[in-house]
Length: 349
Picture 1 (tube, rainbow, N blue to C red):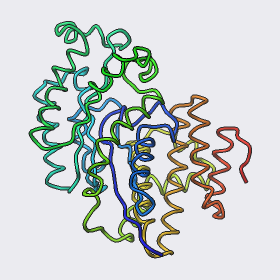
Picture 2 (picture 1 turned 90 degrees about the vertical axis):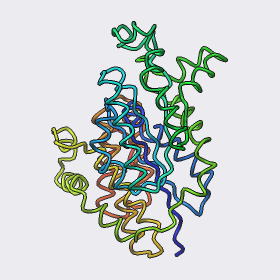
Picture 3 (picture 1 turned 120 degrees about the vertical axis):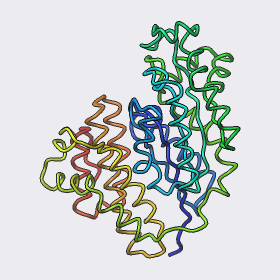
Picture 4 (picture 1 turned 60 degrees about the vertical axis):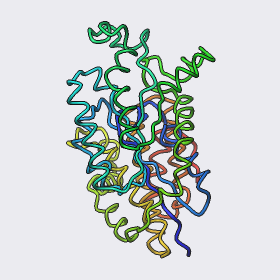
């Protein structure tokens, strides 16, 4: 068995990076992964880990950067902070200092190609914070975010030699050509993406990443056994497996926790995918089972955290496709049955 090249992308930011309002298979990360995988071809495996956390500022991102970014040994990191910072109003200096420290840690502790993103919009008619004093003082939310974070992000990209994905300019160019795209790309809350928006902006992001793919692949890779062990010793993954066996998986996801089960399970899925490219059939097969189970658990978490019919159905169907390859394993069949029941889908066996 020939080992494939592996490339780890991390989306590190807030809820826009996370795509909490979309089913698995329709997230920003999913569409980006699809575009990059198509460009890389069959000899490589691209993983895009959605490591955004809702409401995060740059300061809060800095506090979790080791766990949710650096630990992945990322090859490409896409940074998305500045929107919540502007609304929640830590001082602009705190935002800038925290953002710079994130970039310094990535430079010093990884070899990653870094992409900086602006936010497409804080819609001045629809966003709930359109009347905050800072926005009124600057002539509107969009002028305020341009002042607060976007001008700094653009300048920082130039000074540090980072790639810029200027979604603000891309979005406004798009709606100037076709105003109807405003409702097509952005949800009614005036900030988060629709499924169409996830796809549109993922494709514009892929367009700036694809030219650097050849130099982004790691020169030296840690052993698949290292990544497999890290995937399987994750407490959230072990607890989810135990809860599934004990018939308490729903309770596991609904119970309050001191950690984000979604972010923890993302680690297991990405680490196991990294191990699955091993040239050892034994490790590859074991890692594939862990990766597919983690995918199923992530879908279950989304089903219970966002119980909207299209999210439930889409996430369950995505996970069931992931599990088909390993359904000869009892635990995978059990998880498939659980997801079928959640979504009230016909049994796929």
